[in-house]
Picture 1 (cartoon, chains in turn cyan, orange):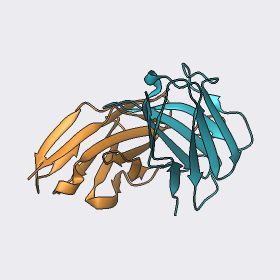
Picture 2 (cartoon, rainbow over the protein chains, first blue to last red):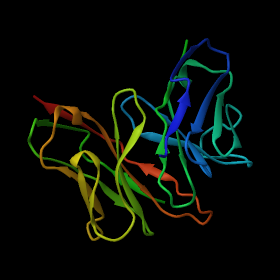
Picture 3 (cartoon, rainbow over the protein chains, first blue to last red):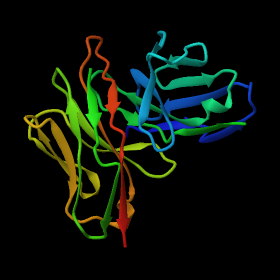
Length: 115
Length: 116
């Protein structure tokens, strides 16, 4: 149990377009979902935390208008990179847990390349 | 706030040799500790975690880690590595916030390369 999926696994888009990434908990209900960004050869940087039905909490320095997060149900959260630019190219990873103090289970990641 | 230090960015080791990946943390409150492994172009997989109880924690793939509160360390060990253990390893820490959410703070990772 505790499987998290992401779609798509990789996406290439033109500068100025928007890209949506889905994160799903397949076999459990996720109270909280987390979005991370990983730069090459770097650690994971937490971007935002989202709880179902409420607004996401963004980390300092993360533009909420650029990285739109929607947590519409207990099994689905989406990250939309709006008006993407080449500097947004990165590996985006989501995670989910069943509740406070529960282990986070990570998705396989989405590699975004903006041309 | 919490922070994690992984001093070794790269660790090369010969196949079937033992390995230790170091992790130190700092926190003003009690923490939970985790080790995750990341294979190329994949997400993170939980290796093991320490929440409470015995300070020696056994995980998957033959890995284990020991929580040392006085030294604020949570080093990862394996007595005999395989080629398939080549990956990036991340140590992470979390503390229970007032809201109940448990944000993870990651170290910068250690690249383990197993040499045939």
